[in-house]
Image 1: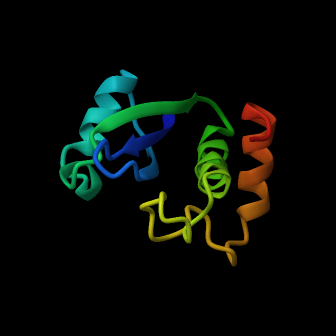
Image 2: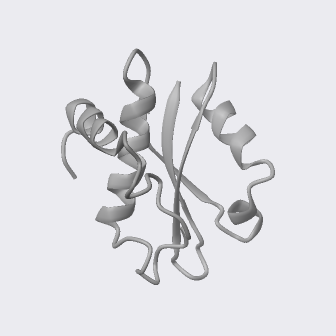
Image 3: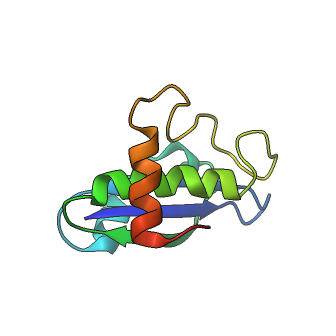
Length: 109
């Protein structure tokens, strides 16, 4: 199971966009991911599951979705976005495949 999620800091309104994967229940996957997550510990405690995918192209689709969400929310330079690195590097040779799989599975943002 592959998942994208959005964490929100209820005090500042900033968001952090991330992804996780594993086997089993989605809520357990999220809790496991956030257990030692620096943003969760820093007050980003409101959790929204964005998209869930399984299957052959799920890993690529979720990776692309994470980058699409970052771009949709204003990118790394937006003060409302706490992420400090891109989900998919601009020089990643698979970036087109991530984007294509995401749009095929989830549509455009």
